[in-house]
Amino acid sequence: MTPAEFAATYGACARTVSDGTGIDSAVLLAQWANETAWGTAVAGNNLGNIRCSPTSFCQYASIDDFAAACIATFHNGFYNAVLAATTPAAQLAAIVASPWSGGHYGGTLQPFYDPVEVYEMTPGEDATLNRSDSILSGSRLRSKAVDQALIDIEKEVKAIASPPPATVDLTPVLNAIAAVKADVDALAAKVASLTLKAQ
Image (cartoon, rainbow, N blue to C red; front, side):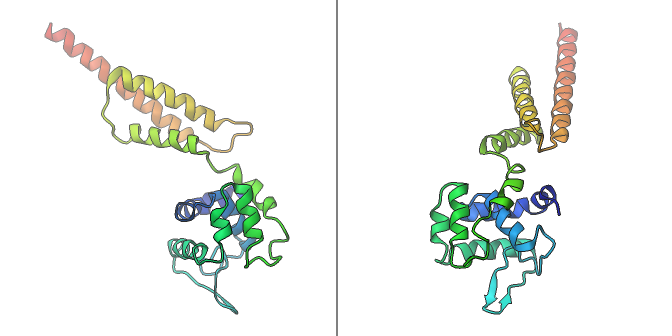
């Protein structure tokens, strides 16, 4: 897989494990990319090559099962330094220095982190998309306030979609915002028409 394909395929799993551990999702993707040769060697949904014994790797029925096992593994006491690290750089260094590594990662995971990090959103970008989703999925329409919110969100989404180089295709989000704006305009026109008839 390319880094983009790898991030798209396993990004949701990385975010689940991140929520359960506090480890940056791109750091997790970097470790898994190393362990699986960019997804070309995934056995039993075990992205992290978690061992069930000294001579065998665990097999999981689903990626969700792997995510739960991965969270438990990071909390087993051997990875306290990883959990205590507060920046991606410190987390990468702690994983490389962890008991499992023992030179396994060749001293660094940076060559795996850099290509996947560009596909992860910042907390601010994530908040913008969550606000968009909230409005687009049925929040009450409140005329001028909604119009302004849509304008603001559209600007923020366009900014996310076009950093140099663009890393996320947000065309569907922008199209959905445009559709909601058109619906709001049509509703406003109907209200105006009814108001005129009532006078």
